[in-house]
Image (cartoon, rainbow, N blue to C red; front, side):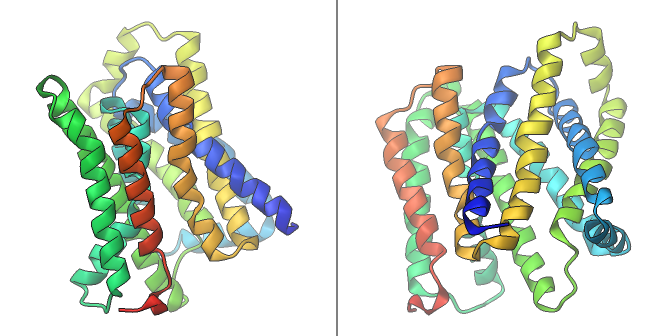
Length: 300
């Protein structure tokens, strides 16, 4: 694949990932267990056959199935998808996508707990990002009528970002030792085993029965398929493909564009209005994340 083609795939990844929140919000108030299970099941039906068709990826998938840590990573990602779905149901798409682009901040926190040396610039970046989140959230949390729901949504979004950070940190550690499972294989395991596990949980909690008792419209089914195909399978394969041909600096900035597309989709499709506080907070959050992502030799 040529460099320009890889850039196009990276752009497609941001475009499709950005639509996740809109699809979730357009769905009726269905249990997040059911939504996430459906999303992962549809993604598994697409991603797993693709990996099995190519000898190289098939070999990697079978190798990953023998690594216990791959199942741990897959479980983490199931939590990520479940948390993200819940967050989108409770707060605006623009706010949640913005919060979910903050894993580098949580990686910094993990490194601090591990007593690793951290450049001063990274601390500054983290502080700027947290100020940005406070500025963005304050108008919503100051409104008592919606504060509780928004706060829970923000908490789930922060949880999904933290899970991503844990995965990135420990995956990099294992990768440096040559022991990390292949990333696309972990995604396939997440989709397949995650869908199965969530279906079991949904059945045990009665979530599936309550949804079956309600009328499932064609629109709901199409939205589920779009969520699993457009905003899960396509960006997963696209990110894995573009990462092989683009420098790490470029691939690491892909998530920074997701809030832009998410906010744009939400504005036109959900008529979500954006306040001045949101734009100020967005600038500060993105600036803080960019500072944290600067190379470690930027100074301490």
